[in-house]
Image 1 (cartoon, rainbow, N blue to C red):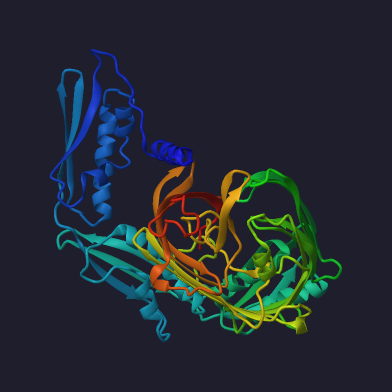
Image 2 (cartoon, rainbow, N blue to C red):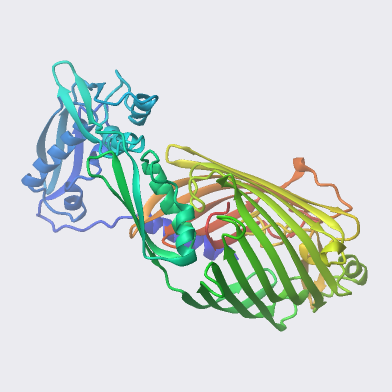
Length: 622
């Protein structure tokens, strides 16, 4: 079952790292080896990277004297960038039969130390400290031209953002070979402290123009700030109505900076068509998708969309074919009540087959979300109601369990929902640093139109931290029902799958019934009342494939889901360790993960006969 995934991972790894040798003809000189002598401070691997002679060696050809000299200058340049101003690089060739070895002899000299001089800065509080903090070269520390070059652009931007729109920076590195010192000389000409002048908005009118004005993070007379301009551009793109946003300050060596905001509306109508095939523990599926979106309808700040996802599924356990349907109509209203407030109205119909049953019925939802003081904190409130009927109930789900799950009657699930979200990540999908937290509370009540009374509490926390080129990510998620009656079947907790616990198939870490169906032993999960999930990943780069970064992952996932007559024990979770690959494409990371269960694989446990799970999906696990 898992031979093909393992073989695919091996072939992909081989394709990324392998090189093909080129045969040479007997009697013809060829480059066998590139050697180094005297390089104590820089490794041979570092010096070999990027040499032109590598191509000669791979092609099985004789070394070109011109290329040998060019590579000597490359090696010298590598040392100069690291502050070895007295470096000397010589070379020679040695031939034995057809084989030629090129040998580079390096006299490294003494590495220069750093000295920083900053001149011309205005006497603004904290400005000198900000400039100095942006340059990661301490006085007396070894010099690195790479660190200086990376910081150079931000050294001017810091002063510009403090209000000096016309600042000019003359930055240079002066090598003092006699004293083995690199002087980083930063000479500023700040010009006058500026403020925003007239603001002109082009490309939009009416209510949409007002929305642009409300998102401006700067006003006439306010101190000039590049951060305010960048924040405005983010706000306007986040509105989702513009294909281009161009904000141009007119820096004309005066204290007043006029700003032109040019926006262009995107397409008002969009049609999406798609299809595919899928497989999960319950079914094989052929699916399609039709989507239609119209912005500015029925009113200017509204966006109306239709999403139809028909599918035809073959149930693995019975071999029967069943349709699946998800049809949702959504109306979103931007700037409801106040700027950035969003109202959502949804209505639709679901027809869904899972392992234990098929559920179907209409649904409706109202929601409102808004940032709270900052765009890093959001609050959501809402109401939803869904009518559910059930059919094609798995024969392993006996009458007693059907009654406990409510599968023998029509269910009305009405609930109020509240969420508080804190998002301090540096990027929402490819995070390298930050924190994300969410607290979600769902109150099922007869007052919301349902026939169930329950409270569902789900807190979640994620953290990300880089260490060199490796990013460590961790998460924890807990969920529990506080029930006055019974729990709706479709609201129960499941774990397992590509974003939960990767040692299990989707939904298969769950309370379940096991038995014989038509001569085959089946496991039928039906969900639990309490859940705990945790995970730890290390994400690291490997190589690039046609310009797309390929990364690897080592992970450890722990989770458990229990029923109301069981006690969740954090010290005895189901654990799985694994490896994965991430190909970072324009649509996001394409992910392949292989998980291996470390414990609790015996009789009485979920999926006792399965120790491996392979997952392919889009996006990071968390």
